[in-house]
Length: 551
View (cartoon, rainbow, N blue to C red):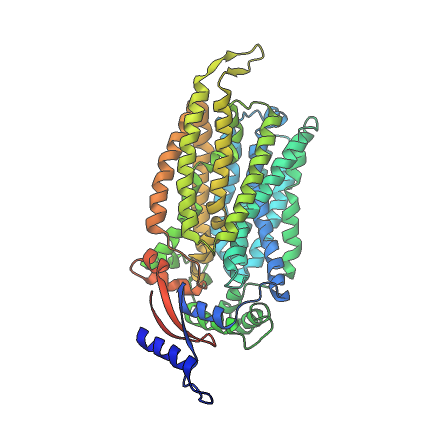
């Protein structure tokens, strides 16, 4: 049906004589982004955001969010410990250097070792089991770390924490993204990684409070809090419904449909949403795919589309780890020391404020993922990080140039207070711009772009890349900060600029589609162009799409 025919139908439908029955319902034209089937469902049956069944899904998602919170707490804890003098004396480590790198890296090493187990556990036992088993291992790791009396036992606890979190943090975002309604998958899925910062805030707050407690308790207290969110996940997982996609591919189709009817269709068996998703499950999900074989990773590299999906997921998960955020997450104490903030209480206050700012900005970014889109948010954040590191380099170099010696207590003296304050402002600004676009999408985008058959093993592969990047962060940056100080930031300027260009040309948009409808993007010759193309729909008053054309 061409444009002139659509206009003719629209005119006839509004100008027929009294008593005459129109041949067809009135036609409207709508320009949309995304898949026409998804947009047709939105028009025919707008989802009820606050229906009781939807609220239940949000509550189920909160349990998944706890996986992110315990990840944020555990990952941020070492930064706070390295700012604590009692901890430094107990284990003979400094705020930077190779000793700090080794202690911090044990968490990443545990995250690497768990990777061969991630796919088999999550694919065979389900998303809920992956979260629960990971949480149990975190509890064990906390006990080992919290009762440690020597460096070896402490690092053993850190290893178990990384192992458990690696499993739970792979299953958590998959569970959240797969159970949520397609219309709200973006926002709820983006909130997942925002709760990483919730854990970081708790770690910073607990560390700040522990400075008022003397001796060993000042740091042991905050290590025991690692049990909090892992215990919540372990206790509540048995009461959660399983992912409908996992149920479907494990020959539990009726249970999958019952889930979709109850929660996405708000109890209406004739709802278009369960029908749309079950049809797409039938077309896209392989009942005998590589996810059924623990050793089979072929789905990750089967064809161009599969490889492209994996590259997109790994790009946002791992390559973003080198934007400079790791230095401000794990070794902020060293950065603050180079900026003139040398007291533990000063550093703890700044860490806490920085985490709060990042959390607020990340939540704002999560709300925007469906309105603005994934690509624009990523491009903005990568570009803004480049500019902020440029400012940080200038401010830090000016501050370093103002060195005027040391006091009798061996405290360095600097004369350029404005440069010190500018460096602090750049730390806060970096956290804000990074959190708006990158933080929410590191939990959402990396799951969306992978097909179901790829998802568990692809997340494991992505986590391998994340932890490999993390190992470089743990070993390279503390040594670099100790040896060349602010000149380290020049590396981040160059890398962030390269990544901005990479994101623009490589990463496609994923909003406006169900997870299964993303297949058409990656099957296209140019996925980026296909993902941002607009379509013109001819739609009846009942919401039926009768024609699709390029806008």
